[in-house]
Image (tube, rainbow, N blue to C red; front, side, top):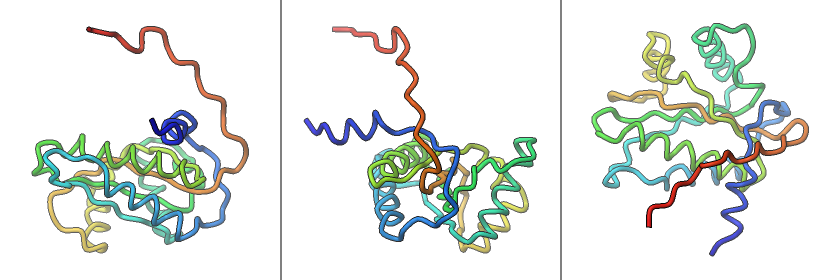
Length: 174
């Protein structure tokens, strides 16, 4: 049994306050590699990951996301890196594939000492004309759907305590 991996999964929390400093290239590469090893339906690897560290692009994505959410604050919580996960809609398991990538990214971030959070609304962002223009600018071609944003950075403050696990989380059929 690999207790270290299980501990990473137990200790991971959503980070909602980041230091402004950019993450190291080494940490970024480790997280991205973990994302590429996520399970996908029939091994088709329908997702792609766009790593965004350009401050102007991060700000533009944040603004788009906030508009969809209907809020007047940064939904990325000041994270300096945004990993956009998209998946090819021609794969019947594209949504599940993209979710597996997101999960690997989040757990890998914890393993390398980063804070992370899954931010929704990527679907709506990249269905918009502004989102489609960004994909074209980035050279992303194909029929992709936004699955989520994995925001990354160094924790600004302490991790919150975990919520207790609910009763009846697991049912056994033997």
